[in-house]
Image (cartoon, rainbow, N blue to C red; front, side, top):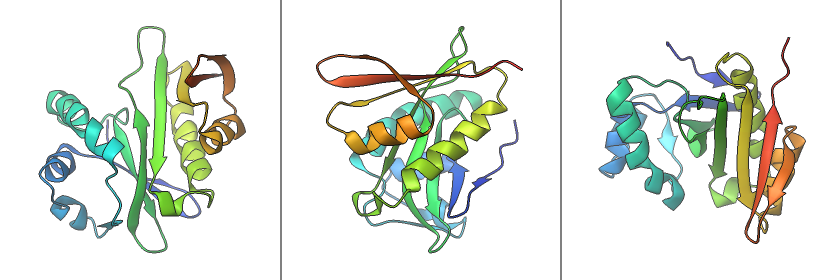
Length: 172
């Protein structure tokens, strides 16, 4: 699959590559700078750094981005990575994927979360293997819950800590 960047009004979503993943794990942004973009001083976040080894393992197997790893969220205005959005892997046998996203703290509350989630949901609409989009967020994370609800996901369950969300793609 030859992935293209996703453009929105204010953002560019760029699929992370094996080279970028390795560079970030080693504490370097050299591979990112080759694209003409910079990292925000607060990105990659701790959460992103925690998942980079998992993304690296996935990309080691596939050699190229499938789209079901992580996408860097780039502010078009200043060409800076302000967060990331991605999946917990390829769709399972039931066509389910789980989406997650995060922004650097000082870029939250500006609509970038909604804009990036809407863009990735549009991309998912063209992925025939995807039937259901799942997400979860902390009960205390009201901004993320609002973003998920606004994107059309429905709350399907909750426990003491998390709210579980689901979006079932319509069949044409």
